[in-house]
Image (cartoon, rainbow over all chains, first blue to last red; front, side, top):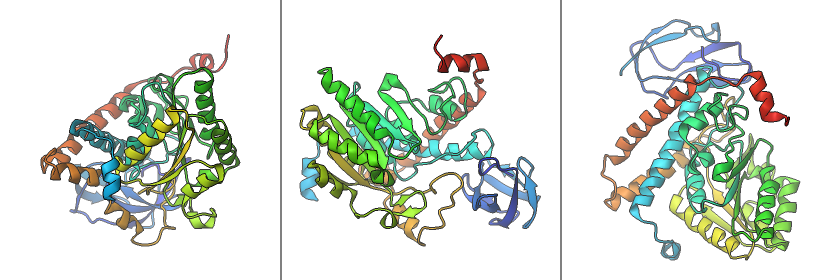
Length: 74
Length: 328
């Protein structure tokens, strides 16, 4: 769960925009995350394949905990 | 339009390539900032300028080394355009001791007096009086330095904007005011907060030239900025430039910009400032067809490496911080 606003402690996975097995580009939105301030798109930090979605839609997750795994292409 | 193109100062191809690289650097710097924020390496908030790179580069490139500038909280692009290193800027955003203000300023306060960057202001419109002060001091000391100040459309509704432009006009101060009209003051469309559609019209109230320029065209921005700088340096007084531009991201990190009408962002992206210049350079045979992509990869490596080095630096300790704030 990325830090997406000042003082954010947890975020809710609103919607996954990619499925397991999908290719993702660096900077491409992969999920919608609800913070204490707004619902924002979360972008991939690396280019690669989304191999596992760990936390599902509706789950609240502390910042820093894994929500998905991407296998880096480079 | 032909008439405008003919009035352009001759800018040689190698300089245009430098401008392209600079704009790509700013774009990828901002994107890396976005990532560093998500990784928790940048605290607070950030205001990114993707989409507005041509204004920073075109206007700043019209300045001479001894000129001054003040910038805003959306100021990473101006600082990089003026020559701040990627590492110094990244380190400042991450609060590290190797940052331009030793990490004490952060994202909204990139300053470096050695390059004439005398302040970045988090308060809307607050950089205008400071730039005017620099301009007046230059005249008073009989130097020929010009001061340029950047602000947003919202900043032109602030009292000091009007006071400063009036005073600058009366005193013929060597000041160039660059308003980046990106259509929104924070979350509010311009029309809901501002009595005029074209900010440049406000110049009429002070009897100074007001110029509208396509903020996505770096060569056009440079042309009007160079004219304004020359006018200021010659003692003819200030110019108000309004660059019509657009920020691709929200106002700040926590703003998803859902108040924008559907399709607006996509429309502006069709006139992306980097793509516009790349296309021109490819058409003129200055840049190979795949040159833009190669440049992006090259700059991406430099950006990632600079961010990595910046993140490896330490923080000032409390005593060192105190020494930066209090005199002995």
